[in-house]
Amino acid sequence: MAERLRLSWEERPLVIIMGLAIVFRLLAAIFAKGWGMFDDHFIVIESAQSWVDGTDYNAWLPGSPGNAGPTGHNWFYPGIHFLLFSFLKWFGLVDPQWKMFIVRLLHAGFSLFTVYFGYRIAETLGGKRSARLAGLLLAVMWFMPWMSVRNLVEMTCVPLVVLGYWMMLREKAALQVFLSFFLAGIFFGLAFNIRPQTVFFPFGIVALLLFGLEWKKLFALTLGTVIPVLIIQGLIDAVIWDYPFAEIIGYIRVCVTERNDYISLPWYNYFLTIFALLIPPVSFFLFFGFVRLWKRYLVFFIPVLLFFLFHSYFPNKQERFILPMIPVLILVGSVGWSEFVATSGFWSRRPGLLKGGWLFFWILNTLALLLFTFTYSKKARVESMTYLSRYQNIHELAVFDAEYCPEQQPKFYLGQWPHIGSDDVGGSNPDTLLSRYSRDKTENQPRFILFTGEADLNTLIAKATKQYPGLVYETTIEPGFVDWLVHRLNPINKNRRVIIYRNTEFFPKQVN
Image 1 (cartoon, helix red, strand yellow):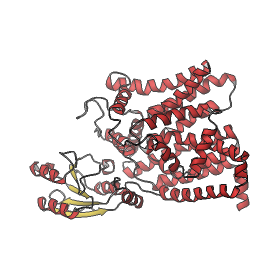
Image 2 (tube, rainbow, N blue to C red; image 1 turned 180 degrees about the vertical axis):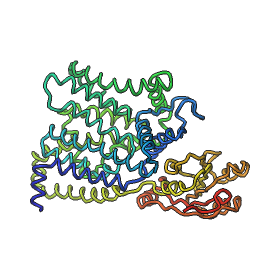
Image 3 (cartoon, rainbow, N blue to C red; image 1 turned 90 degrees about the horizontal axis):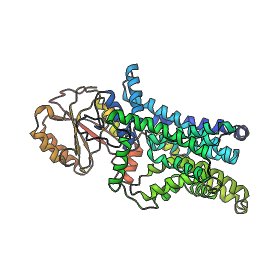
Image 4 (cartoon, rainbow, N blue to C red; image 1 turned 45 degrees about the vertical axis):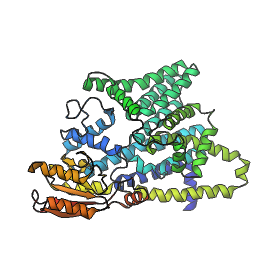
């Protein structure tokens, strides 16, 4: 069996790589429920479903209460989910968990383009040995399956970037050069419409073509990039806002004016992110391999360098921002490292050291891969809303947090769009919220109260039950293991249990 696997790996590596990629992405689609970061749920899923249900969760649309103009969020990616959810509703599928399984499955399938064409690019650049390494890393790098099924624009744009590069590198006759670069531009333009920062990829390539006076390729790539941007960013905004590019202008304005309002980290932060994300010592191998080939593959190096420098300079630094360049770093780094090892006297004399480094990497990567592929992220919040969805006509919910830091609740899983009283009424102090409710009319009282946090939680529950004598304990939803662990390691990640109390004035009996 071992000999058969070895021969298959030598003769048909792409079949094995794609098989591994499919298996782990399918497992992630089934088991990796929930969401990863704020944006991949509340910016994409909540917005799209609210439009289907005839509301506007984020108040993005003109005329919605609270909307003061373009918010800087383009319509393309949420709009695709709006069309998908509309189709599923027409088809009769309304269960949120099943809808999200379909979403994860579609993203998993789309991410396979990264693996397949990443392998083909590495094979074109450095042969089968380099392609085997690049393809395997793209298939089963610990974060890839879990990230691939998320609604993160930073990951969803990656297959389009890889496809853009493949269109430029594939074997072609002279008459097909224009078409190849035009199609490459189309993919880069689509990637821009999902994640604007990917503009550094076509921009860097255009700069190289301009410097090399390759006018035919330059015109084709530019035309291809501009067309989807004009249609998606220009035409759609012109219909909605009466002038083109309203959202991208708003996005740039927000990035400039609010650049210091989020996580500001030092300029070298993304070096640390890359070296940790790709797991030492392999992360150093890949980085060395990528830099080693910079002159030979400027078409990769310059765009990645521009992308990296911009994000290193920009104050707001979140780990996910760097994701679009990681697959490019992996596939070119694999080529550079494979070539270096094949000719290195140092490593030829120390095969045990090299094998030990890779063994250390694969042990850690496999453990993390198995852990995250089966991780149900934000489980407590998702399951709380899923639990409450059995009750109809919930007009008001309240979240009381003992640490004055209530978490935003995913109404998508509730299937209703009630007002949720938390820190949107004069601060996150639960006493302030109780005081507001005491002055409101009866119909504005919370039907359920969700208690979170740990410090003085019993005192907080006692205050609420004093104001609402009919408040009774309903259930407790515990976080998943990874959520619990991440919260313990860094309490800034508010992944905590949710204790639900029911207001019997509105729901006298528990619904099972």
